[in-house]
Amino acid sequence: MDNPFFGYFVWGLLLAAPLWWIGWRFRVASWLPRLRSLLQRRVVQLPPQVESLVILGKRQHGSGGRKA
Image 1 (tube, rainbow, N blue to C red):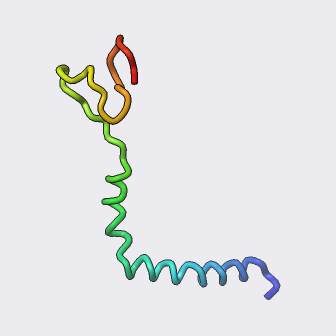
Image 2 (image 1 turned 30 degrees about the vertical axis):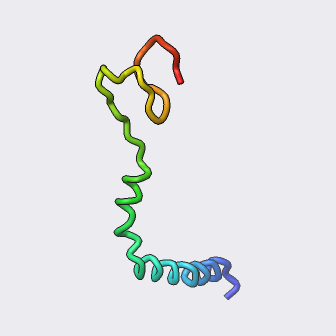
């Protein structure tokens, strides 16, 4: 039993089993699509009438004028 791989394997099981149980118990997999959609950045295309306005950040397209 002097094989280091065996020790790491056992420790991996000891750590992975409780984490898997917590993920299963709290149904973490059902939260992942919702979390991924919240964390994704979306590009918003504004109509030409409001192109000169800056809402929550910098303009991505357009030329001339002062950039925020």
